[in-house]
Length: 361
Image (cartoon, rainbow, N blue to C red; front, side):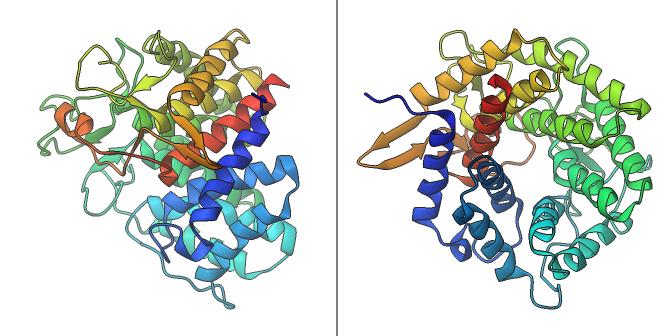
């Protein structure tokens, strides 16, 4: 059997989604949504590596379906998730010079002043989740703010992102394992909230993956001289061995509930595993983590290829992807359905493969 390269694997993943959905059909269809944003950012990075304009045009077509000639578009104004897709606007503008992309970016930037906040100034994840900070939110709203600063020179956005990260870390990091709880409720009123700490009770792999991915993307965009850069890198250096302590010995993958692999109802999950690969590979590539960790990222990738990726009759499929998930208790996480080719997973897979390819080089 012919061995294909990592880039070819990433292209197979792109093609699987492109053959299933037009840009207008990407689920949830016709909506400005982070599901599409994560996948399209992964595809954009494949475009950067291959130069295949078909990938760039696919990304552009999705954005152009939603952003009109005046830079107007519909988006959820009460949630951090809406901002994530905005990271695509900057490379589109850089290549095309089309000003409507920057008009749209300014609309998203305005949300930071309107979000509800905790008493310390932490952004609520969504209005319907009052006084709650979720790990996911740092990735959804952080990298965009730094990219916006690079274009429009608003350094206060850097401080905003760093403050949100510090709040999230202070409330969700578990000092015993080095892992992070999925969510924190300042009011300690949610059914899942610890009555003393306000934290949700479990470590959910995809949420920790979002956090690690955010640390990488934020640290890469901070100037070398920025005093907080070293602090973020130290957090990455602590996070990676904490993750590896719970990597499944047999498959190289991670479980849906990160630290409870021994429990029968728990299951191996693709999107969280992919985001951990991304975090580790990028940290090694940047010289922020020991190069020996790359072997563990490769082992996880090989585990995905062996246990989660299936190709038959020219069809490519990534299994074991948890669908969209809120914060909750153990039974909630392990009872969530696993899907195939969900954009959460394919997008995370693309990020992982391209990061690992670059780190190996």
